[in-house]
Image (cartoon, rainbow, N blue to C red; front, side):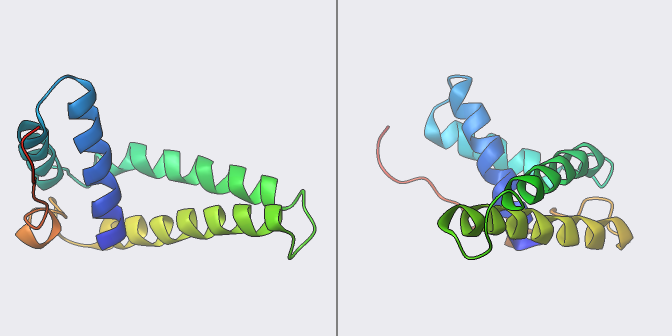
Length: 114
Protein backbone atom coordinates (compact mmCIF):
# COMPACT_ATOMS: atom_id res chain seq x y z
CA UNK A 1 0.00 0.00 0.00
CA UNK A 2 2.96 2.37 0.57
CA UNK A 3 3.95 2.16 -3.11
CA UNK A 4 0.41 3.07 -4.10
CA UNK A 5 0.35 5.99 -1.66
CA UNK A 6 3.70 7.25 -2.92
CA UNK A 7 2.64 6.94 -6.54
CA UNK A 8 -0.62 8.80 -5.95
CA UNK A 9 1.15 11.47 -3.88
CA UNK A 10 3.66 12.03 -6.70
CA UNK A 11 0.89 12.34 -9.27
CA UNK A 12 -1.02 14.80 -7.10
CA UNK A 13 2.13 16.84 -6.43
CA UNK A 14 3.07 17.16 -10.10
CA UNK A 15 -0.52 18.00 -11.07
CA UNK A 16 -0.44 20.89 -8.60
CA UNK A 17 3.00 22.00 -9.84
CA UNK A 18 1.70 21.90 -13.40
CA UNK A 19 -1.19 24.13 -12.29
CA UNK A 20 1.35 26.77 -11.24
CA UNK A 21 1.53 26.15 -7.50
CA UNK A 22 4.82 26.70 -5.69
CA UNK A 23 6.61 23.60 -4.42
CA UNK A 24 5.47 24.12 -0.79
CA UNK A 25 1.87 24.76 -1.88
CA UNK A 26 1.86 21.79 -4.25
CA UNK A 27 3.24 19.65 -1.43
CA UNK A 28 0.54 20.79 0.98
CA UNK A 29 -2.23 20.26 -1.57
CA UNK A 30 -0.91 16.80 -2.49
CA UNK A 31 -0.83 15.82 1.18
CA UNK A 32 -4.43 16.95 1.66
CA UNK A 33 -5.59 15.21 -1.50
CA UNK A 34 -3.92 11.92 -0.53
CA UNK A 35 -5.26 12.16 3.01
CA UNK A 36 -8.81 12.68 1.68
CA UNK A 37 -8.65 10.00 -1.05
CA UNK A 38 -11.52 7.55 -0.54
CA UNK A 39 -11.99 3.91 -1.43
CA UNK A 40 -14.52 5.05 -4.03
CA UNK A 41 -11.84 7.24 -5.65
CA UNK A 42 -9.76 4.12 -6.12
CA UNK A 43 -12.33 2.65 -8.54
CA UNK A 44 -11.10 4.89 -11.38
CA UNK A 45 -7.48 4.33 -10.42
CA UNK A 46 -8.14 0.60 -10.45
CA UNK A 47 -9.36 0.83 -14.05
CA UNK A 48 -6.21 2.70 -15.08
CA UNK A 49 -3.97 0.19 -13.33
CA UNK A 50 -5.82 -2.71 -14.96
CA UNK A 51 -5.41 -1.14 -18.39
CA UNK A 52 -1.70 -0.55 -17.78
CA UNK A 53 -1.24 -4.13 -16.62
CA UNK A 54 -2.96 -5.52 -19.72
CA UNK A 55 -0.90 -3.29 -22.02
CA UNK A 56 2.37 -4.28 -20.33
CA UNK A 57 1.48 -7.98 -20.54
CA UNK A 58 0.60 -7.63 -24.22
CA UNK A 59 3.85 -5.83 -25.03
CA UNK A 60 5.91 -8.22 -22.90
CA UNK A 61 4.49 -11.19 -24.76
CA UNK A 62 5.71 -9.79 -28.09
CA UNK A 63 9.31 -10.43 -27.11
CA UNK A 64 11.48 -13.44 -26.42
CA UNK A 65 11.69 -14.21 -22.67
CA UNK A 66 14.97 -12.94 -21.29
CA UNK A 67 15.46 -10.24 -23.94
CA UNK A 68 15.95 -6.63 -22.86
CA UNK A 69 12.54 -5.65 -24.23
CA UNK A 70 10.83 -8.56 -22.50
CA UNK A 71 12.48 -7.68 -19.18
CA UNK A 72 11.50 -4.03 -19.56
CA UNK A 73 7.82 -4.87 -20.08
CA UNK A 74 7.92 -7.60 -17.46
CA UNK A 75 9.06 -4.97 -14.96
CA UNK A 76 6.15 -2.75 -15.97
CA UNK A 77 3.75 -5.67 -15.67
CA UNK A 78 5.03 -6.52 -12.19
CA UNK A 79 4.69 -2.88 -11.11
CA UNK A 80 1.04 -2.83 -12.17
CA UNK A 81 0.47 -6.25 -10.60
CA UNK A 82 1.76 -4.93 -7.27
CA UNK A 83 -0.53 -1.92 -7.50
CA UNK A 84 -3.46 -4.22 -8.25
CA UNK A 85 -2.76 -6.24 -5.10
CA UNK A 86 -2.53 -3.04 -3.04
CA UNK A 87 -5.81 -1.69 -4.42
CA UNK A 88 -7.60 -4.98 -3.81
CA UNK A 89 -6.36 -4.95 -0.21
CA UNK A 90 -7.73 -1.46 0.27
CA UNK A 91 -11.08 -2.42 -1.22
CA UNK A 92 -11.39 -5.19 1.38
CA UNK A 93 -10.44 -2.96 4.31
CA UNK A 94 -12.91 -1.15 6.53
CA UNK A 95 -11.05 2.16 6.16
CA UNK A 96 -13.01 4.66 4.09
CA UNK A 97 -9.98 6.97 3.91
CA UNK A 98 -7.15 4.47 3.42
CA UNK A 99 -4.34 7.07 3.35
CA UNK A 100 -5.51 9.32 6.19
CA UNK A 101 -2.75 8.15 8.56
CA UNK A 102 0.22 10.57 8.58
CA UNK A 103 2.54 7.66 7.78
CA UNK A 104 1.37 7.88 4.18
CA UNK A 105 1.82 11.62 3.59
CA UNK A 106 3.63 13.42 6.43
CA UNK A 107 7.18 12.36 5.54
CA UNK A 108 7.18 14.28 2.27
CA UNK A 109 8.99 17.57 2.65
CA UNK A 110 10.07 20.45 0.49
CA UNK A 111 13.62 21.75 0.52
CA UNK A 112 15.10 24.75 -1.25
CA UNK A 113 13.75 28.14 -2.14
CA UNK A 114 11.89 27.59 -5.42
